[in-house]
Length: 593
Image (tube, rainbow, N blue to C red):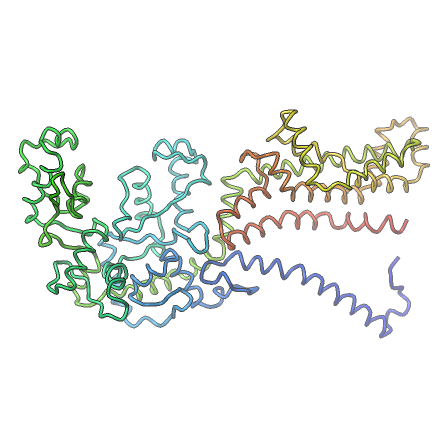
């Protein structure tokens, strides 16, 4: 029976009432949808727009906003790296402009020239601000999975690592411009270098500007930003003021891959080795080099060619003091620098157009970059929680078993109380309802101790047994069962039906609406179970989605967490949409009766 009868529905008062009801329902729906859309929009944010509050992300419709996000990720969310590459003084990425490229041909020529140089800055890797998983980190993990057929143990053996699982794999990519960015020659870093060179998208790798790095890292800290900035020269500068800073930069700051030693350092090099190793037998034993005399050991021109003498080459470059206090180091006249941007300046007499090249690369791959920022956090959560983790499988099994047990234990208990009506039925119901008087935080302690004594911790039994029977569900079911016609049971008993058959054919068949409510309640309780699941299942292999979300929050930023919340909200939304008709019948039918 409707709330408003058909008679008089065309009257203006009734129509106004209809309109008001639908307006209120629409407003209520918006209060549910808008927060979800804001959360979905938040799942696309990075450092440059993490404080935005828009239903539709700005970068979806604005190329300037997308360009800022791209440049931020390209330079690993480091304003210092951006300033060194572009030669600008901007403090953050939110102020970047998006002008037209003045000389596209020069930008394309520089990009081709830099490709031949080999020195690259791997972007989309480090995320100190947004605290997410960079695109190239995710790509590297997929690369390793394909390479080792998804077997983490096989990968650990080949790469000489000890990751417990794919979710634990991380890449703290070194800065290829800095001395501290040098890494040991290991299978792990060789695999990373192969990935960056062959597998990483070309728009996710930046060009190295050694001149900008020199100015940002050494010159500006010493001279200030207002002082004239000299261009970095490949050979020793003539200006004494620049020479001191240049020497410091070459000896201690820049990555040794850019440094060259000339043949005039040969005598100093051999004297350094003689002081460092004392005698030739020790030198041969340590380095495995067949040298009969110190003059047989030439000075390697490049760090990459030094082989077993790599540590000695670095010590000779920076300076090493022997036991007598004498300092051995490469003479300044033998030092030089070599990089793509220095070679470009020598050939063209102009600074390399790195900014214009980055912009052209962005324009050529704009759709792919926009798709990446729309999905990267969702993909990260999917990989961590579902592909490489066991959270989804554990949660599906836990929820399914919780619903199944709730539809077996609670209806049987309520059927016994309703069908046989024992004298103490209401006392039993009161006892069952009294269990709701204690907060879950209080009951968790004795339940934990009991499960520990039974040896059930870190098992599904520990999750399922404490919530298998629910007092309020039994109370609701008994009330619904009491409203069913008694004549049906009497007729079935006359026909020879047993209690289990009557329970299944009559009670269960006529109670689908209330059973749907009980099933949904059991699903929601199991799906949202966090504190209890964390307490009794501390083994990572037994974590459910809620526990995984909590652990995810410890290491990732707002963008990834919004994406996690979106994915976590979808199962409950799907279950409610699937069971909403039965739920409404469970609410309305008892009221009508």
